[in-house]
Length: 126
Length: 107
Image (cartoon, rainbow over all chains, first blue to last red; front, side, top):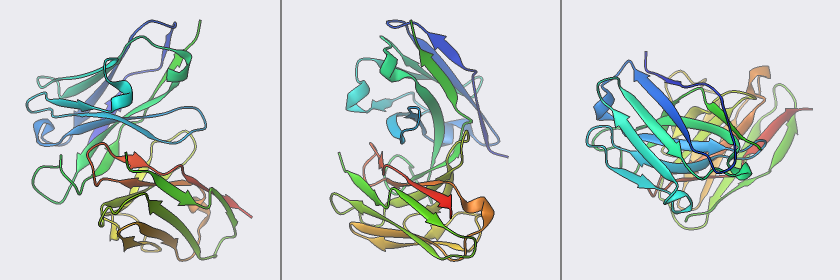
C-alpha cells in the first residue's frame, strides 16, 4: 500500500537547522509531487512547499523562502525538508503529503493530499 | 494568498445528528476544494476531493458540495468515530491554503 514514513522527533536550539526525511513506498516515487505542511501546537495546517521528485524542482511558500530547502533521493525514494535559522515559532509537527489528482500533472489544480506521513515533531528550545 | 474561512470553529453534536460545516474562500476557487479529518495526534486524512468526490474507503455519510466561494461538508448521521477536527483546503493555486479548522465535539 502507498505509505510515507517520516524520521523521528527532533529537538533543536534556536538558530540551528533541522532536516526531516520522508520515505515513500508502494508507488512510483517519481510520478507524484510531494508537499510539506506544518502544524504548530494546537494550531491549523500551513503549507510550506512542493518538490517534484522526478526533476527535483521546488516551489516554496513565500513565508519560508530563504530558510527552507526541499531535496530528494530517487535511489531511496526519499524526500527531505531542511529548515534553517530555527526559532521557537518553528516548533511544530511537520508532515509530508503526496499530491494526488485524477490524471496528468498533479502540480496543477485540482489536486489533493493523500496519503500523509505520520508527522515529525520538531521542538525548538534553548 | 487565498484565505479560507470555516464556520463554526467548534461544534457540539450528538451521535446520530446531521452536521454541516461551511468553508468560504476569499475568491472563486471553482470546485478545487478538499476536506480532511484529523484526530488528536494523527495526520490528516482525506475525506472529500474536488468539492464533492468521496475518497475511496470513506463512509457514504460524508458528503461535500459547493463551487465558487462557498462549500459545505455534511455528515448525515454522526458516529462516535467522527468526533475530530475538520479542515478545508483550496487547491486552486499550488500554494494551497487551509481553513482554520472545525472541532467537532460530543454533546
